[in-house]
Length: 389
Image 1: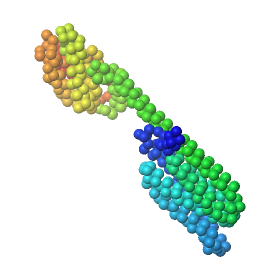
Image 2: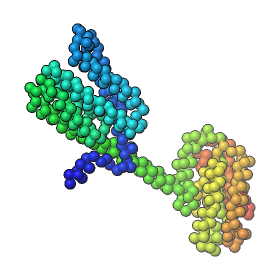
Image 3: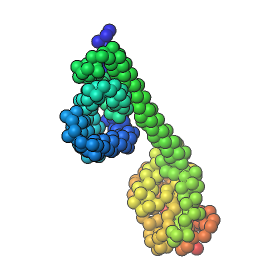
Image 4: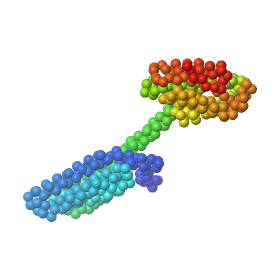
C-alpha cells in the first residue's frame, strides 16, 4: 500500500502520450518568469559583491567576509551559465530539466553555506527560510526531485549550522524552523507543480476538443453543400461558394461562363433500367464533370434531377465552347448502357452562356441563358453544344 502510494507520487500524473506537450507547456509557461527571477538573483549577487568589496577592509577584512564573496561569485557564475543555456532549453524540456536539476544542486550547497556563514556571525537561518520556498517556485521540476533537494538542503544546513556557537545555543529553534520550512516547501512544490500541469493539460484537452469540433463543423458544412448521390456541389454550394464570391469579386475575375448539361433521354433510361441504374448513370456523368472541374478550375454543381451546372471565369468564348465539347465527348466515351432511343452510350446536351465582363446579378442571367441554349440543343437533336446568342 505504501509502495503504491509512493509510486503514485513519483510517476507522471497524466497519460504518457501527453508528456512532451505538458513538459514543453510547463517550460513555455514559466520561461519568462524563470529568466526574470534568475536575472534578479544575478543582480543581487553582483550587488552584494560590490557592497563587500567597498566595505572598510574590503573583501579581505576577514576570512568569513571572503567566503561570502566567493559564495556570491559562485552563484553569480552559476546564474550566468543558467541564463546562457536556458535559451536553448526553451524547446527541449529534457535539457531544461537537467539544467534545473544542476542549478538546484548548486542552490543546495549555496543556501547551506550562506546559512552557515550567517550563523558564524550570530544570525538566524533567514537565507534558508527565504530561498527554500523560492526553489519550489523557481525550479520547474517534478515534486519528488524538488523534495529530495529540499530534504538534502535541510539536513546539510542543520549539520553546518548546529556546529557553530549560534547553532548550539539555538538547537531546538533551528531544527524546528528548518524542518517546518522544508515540509512547507515540499507541499508547496507538489501543489504548484500539479496546479501548473493541470492547467496546461486542461488547455490541451480543450484545444483538442475545439479542433475536433471545428473539424466536425467543417465536415457538416461540406456535407450540407454536397449532393449526397454525386458528391458534386448542391444548390447551397452554388449560392455560398459560387454566387457569393462572384458578387464580391466578380469584377476582378474577367469573363463569366456557365454550362448547363442535361442527360439525354434520362427518363427513358430510368424506365428501361430502373432507378438504381439511373443513379449509377448520374454518378458516372458526375465523375466526368468532377474530374474535369478539378483539372480546369470549374465549379461543378448538380442543379437538379439529371441537370448539371458548370461555372468558371477568365476564359475566352472560343475556349469555353471547346471545353464544353470536350466534356460532351468525354461523357459519350464512358459507354454507359443506354436506353432504347439512344445509341450505345449515354450522351448529354449542353447549353453555354458567356459574358466577357461581370456585372451584379449576372449569374442568374447567365443560368437562364444557358437554359435557353440547352433547350435549343435538345430541339436540334440532342448530344450537342449550343452557345447562347
